[in-house]
Length: 322
Image (cartoon, rainbow, N blue to C red; front, side, top):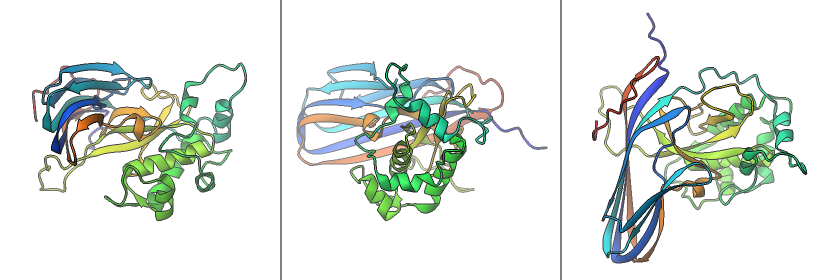
């Protein structure tokens, strides 16, 4: 007898960032975007972020995109900075009832996003324009139009575009960095997850459609017989395309797509933040005085705590590493 498909999963994530400076830092101001989102499709059960050395000041703010940001200041000299965020997240199936062949067409959504004088503001239009990491490029419009045809349902067309990017581009770790332009990725036909998210966003926006960048984590499963490696995971990135009227209770009007893995994200994707591009959701950034050269080490560990069908127990189970 076949077991029912799980409709929820409880995941544990540890994200550790370590900076070492060749010269002590005298003062530092940092912003961390590491706290996972809570909404209809995902619930943050427990979260803890530890900073060493201890900050002189620290506060939490919600940005204009609904993401949680921790601002902290260090005023004592230090040669090392360690930021460790531990999360327990309940992820629910959001797209189990997705019917990609239904819903509005590309032309209908494009028309709805078109600016009209005195028309009500559509919040999704904020994700319609160029942003620092997502330029408007005619070459990407031409590439995307083979998928994003006017008559096609947008959900179906966007999934087709995602699958083409997955086929046409090689996932090649260390082949790019965050400063690599989207056009270079397009020409070289290789990159990493953030490149493919930016590339697909550039395709959507060049065709008059709204898309937002999503940062988060992806549970990776080791080969049979091998134990998971602590710290071997990484932050992940994908995107959401605005498809009004999807009719999915836990997803609203946003359809998440992961071009790196050619999939609609499910129970193994944990969403941390969303914005126009990577610059809006950088996990850790800051301004320092002093420091000289620096080295950076990031370690991410993701674990599946439980999964099941129906309503899960809502009490957090986390008390440290599982």
